[in-house]
Amino acid sequence: MPFIALSLIVQVALVVHVIKTGRNTMWIWVVVMLPGAGSIAYVILEVIPELMGSRTARKASQSLGKIINPNKGINTATQNYSISNTVENSLKLADECMSKTMYEEAKCLYEKSLVGIHEDDPEIMFGLAKAEYFLGNYAESKRILELLIEKNPEYKNQEAHLLFAKTVEALGELSQAFEEYRVLAGYYSGAEAKYHYASLLRQQGETEKANSLLVEIVSSSKVSGKHYSSLNKKWITLAKKELGS
Image (cartoon, rainbow, N blue to C red; front, side, top):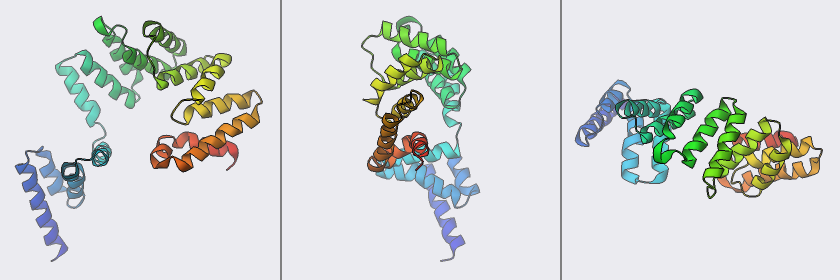
């Protein structure tokens, strides 16, 4: 059967699938106007996740969706917020703004959400501290993180701890940063904390100990699988560079 005829049959079948399953009619235009690529995108994003229902399939679908429509998340969050500016919608939009490096907008949304029963919410406070950090407002970021722990002494979050360490380092409070990174290096699940700790150790002339941590980062990447390596690619690359390997 000629390829063109086969492609046409596939397109018709997928259009019928879109209609029968009640999916967004936008897919009809994608399949028809982008022969081949449109059909492949529809199968990966809609058909395979439906058939498999697996976490892997859903993640693949989400990743491809971000490539095809990278602004879908923030557009949806903005629309929902414009309809109802609840705390939940504010936080979803704030998170999307953070992912788009729109830190000033995220900061405003996090601040707006710290009201009523959410006044001392640790996750919202952490989000605000992150926004302040990326805006270069390190003193304010530190203040918020200290207030977070004061109001929520039982709160445990390795990312918040790492942010605090990076914040005091940015403020030049190296002795405190050194201690925070030392503690983090013992339990933080990724490679970033160990890399920062190694960097401070090198600054203090403790090259052997620093190199030991860098070797640990590289070694972990070899036995921890692709997911770990992907998440920690930046720190693994820097560690290898520091070691000259």
